[in-house]
Length: 53
Image 1 (tube, one colour):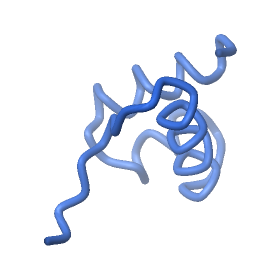
Image 2: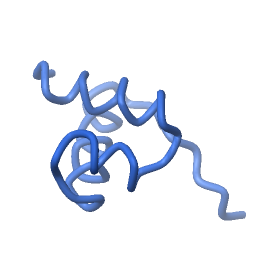
Image 3: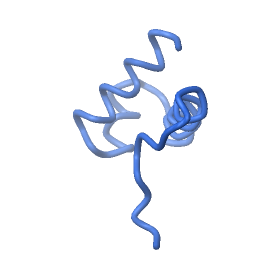
Image 4: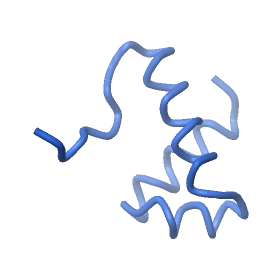
């Protein structure tokens, strides 16, 4: 895990909103999603549960 990944996770947790986290990190929402998916894969768990049934 890189520092950028952890920063992304903390920022997303603080804002609880992909758009606001992306804006603060000066990146895009898809980039946030990709980083989060990579972290979920690395740790073998779901960091952001989907609201879908």
